[in-house]
Length: 150
Image (tube, rainbow, N blue to C red; front, side):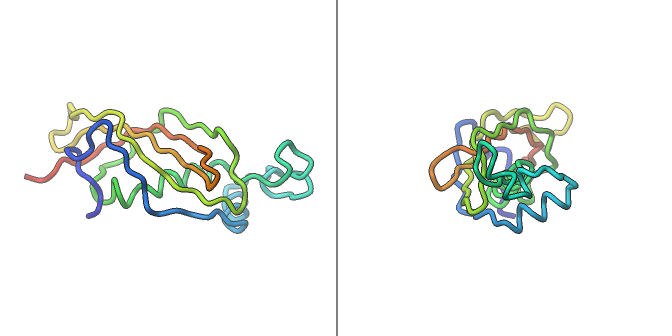
């Protein structure tokens, strides 16, 4: 397992994930159509050109999924019992086709589970940052994490 155990996830820990991802037109097209989202800001270049963005923007739920996935190999692969929920998700800047995103994660809080002696609850903040250094997504979430086996 490459994920971290509860005991390793101390408040203040920041992890800059090595995996980066350039968002492609195919990513945006497939995700948007698979999720039945007909928003022309994602699909229609002519419509989007007349918008405040001047071009198509990437579906924000795709961006959220990418942020929620990139960190897994470093933090939670094989060591999580589940995602407990998203407390807050923001998209301060749009993502455009061709943007390359990197993710950094910070442990905000860690506490023992009152109902599961083999686990603890960890709150994370994940940030996606584009190639221009702009934060494009910020996610505050909680996860139930395994304690290190005895």
